Amino acid sequence: MPELPEVETVKNTLKRLTLNDTIKSVDIYHDNIIEYPSIKKFKNQIKNQTIRDIDRRGKWLIFKLDDYYLLSHLRMEGKYFLKENEPKEKHEHVVFKLKSGKELRYRDTRKFGKMHLIEIDKINNIGPLLYLGLEPWDLTEDYLLNSFRNKRIPIKTILLDQSIIAGIGNIYADEILFLCRINPLKETGLITKKEIVNIIANTIKVLGEAITKGGTTIRSYQSSEGVDGLFQQELLVHNREKEACKKCETIIKKIVVRGRGTYFCPKCQK
Image 1 (cartoon, rainbow, N blue to C red):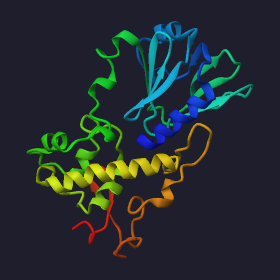
Image 2 (tube, rainbow, N blue to C red; image 1 turned 90 degrees about the horizontal axis):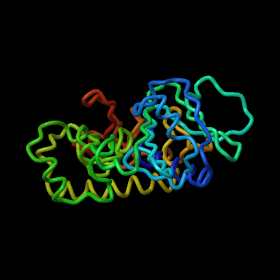
Image 3 (cartoon, rainbow, N blue to C red; image 1 turned 60 degrees about the vertical axis):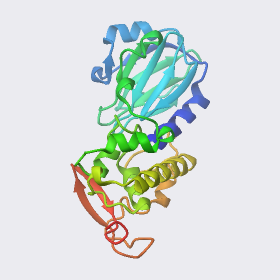
Image 4 (cartoon, one colour; image 1 turned 60 degrees about the horizontal axis):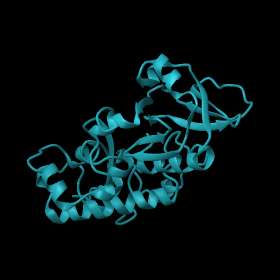
């Protein structure tokens, strides 16, 4: 699943390719991707809207149009491609036809992605952004202390909770906990102030480095230009089951934490 660094990479790529182009019309081939409003309203409202800017909040892409925000969540397999005069492929489910003659195509083999088209003056009242926690760069010790207090669920699970920290997914949660030397099963309510300081610092470090390297290629993630992320070469524990820890040479283990495959070093993360 694309996480914050991958979505940031897609955002930056799309800004180079589509900014100030106008959406003439949109073809929708899988209705469930459009979560709000109705398909008819979505098609009518997005006509003749110009892409003024593209931003990101958590794992959501935010296209700022003239009168609306187009919110797009890539979920497991979503990707954007800019094409011109090419046949539509099987899994291209939403096709934005642009004034330039190009087409911005949303491809999603699993069809899990979601889009919302929300009026600019309503963005603070409705929509999925209302339920997101802080961006990693806005985290404070007090905020996490309050968020973690009295919670008995594993710290790995809390790091994945988008209502607390927006943008961290399975890959980077494993990497952050490894650098913090925290076992992923440790109860969140037992996390110390010192560990919280380390979580904040390593969250910023890991995500910042991943953004610089264009994200992580796991399974089928690619940026909108088809460029594989390079951060997978830097992974310390994630996806490295039965390999030697790069710090202590202990064999990396994989366990399941609340339904999520989790990688850790038994020695470094006792």
